[in-house]
Length: 280
Image (cartoon, rainbow, N blue to C red; front, side, top):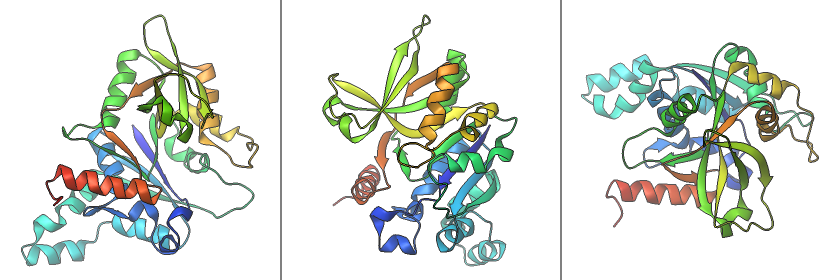
């Protein structure tokens, strides 16, 4: 399997700091948000990862972090600081990274662009499509992407979609995955509701931008036309795929945090600090 991680957004909710610092590079404790998604990919057995970055400084930061710096690594070793460099060394030793720059184009934009730009990279391979500013924290050391891949294999479906579970009263804040139950008892994607004004069920599955698809699913992204708001939306391509193929909905174990907004990022830091016993 391969992975495509999208981090080309402007991060407007974090302005003015996001002018210089990509929101995916903001720290949760001592690692950037994006590093958690990459670690989950590695735990799922992924060794080839394409990161779709913005042009300019924010893209440069991502490339710098995920590119080996041999001189710096040797310097840390000479000072006896290997343990400080170890998280970076693990990333560089375990994965090959490809960086794809997404142009800032006012005529063609949206969440589907990273997959379209990575079409050659994923051809012939199953791939995870991931938003780099969403975070899952697990207390048991497990991997939600590994679980997603295992669930897809067990269900014998072409693709699978990770879902977090929220109370129905909070459903209006999210994109909601409406399931249908197949004859084998699996829950498959039937419809996607964008921030419904009213939701009557007690719990809801929400889209957290972690999808496992076969390589040929990329054609659904390439055939997209703009939505009413002008965006090329990944959810439209995923829903079109689900209408032609079984797409498993798999609830995640990890606690979900939307680090694309300050409140979600702060909550992720507090949760991570608490898990490590750092909260006063």
